[in-house]
Image (cartoon, rainbow, N blue to C red):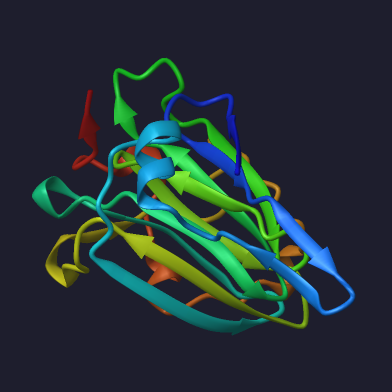
Length: 184
């Protein structure tokens, strides 16, 4: 795997080595040893899959306190724009984001450490999204930030009129209005 550090400390882009021939292809999608050595010593305890259609924006989500999650995300089918927003108070990159296109074709993964809000937008007709988490889902600790917060300035790659949100995500506050963020 090739590991590329993003412009924000801790967010890492991972490109697996693909071995192909006339039969198809093979890649090592995950190795705990290599991940520990090249990315971060994280133990994933939960793996989630979601299927969404074009225009769906999921996020920006995070869990607070002891329930915070680091995530390793990828796409099994289709194409998404994946976004991580630094919400660590005192960070030199607070409020900045990293956006990476993930697809079944590029097989790219993104590691998002604790202290970041996360979301993605479906750019293809539909997409199957996979994410591993280092902490179980805790509904009472889940929080969100508005997907279209102008202070963050994410270009989701789809027209605003095509965006499909959950009722919960449509009510997320602006980053400036959130009090329970992460301390460095």
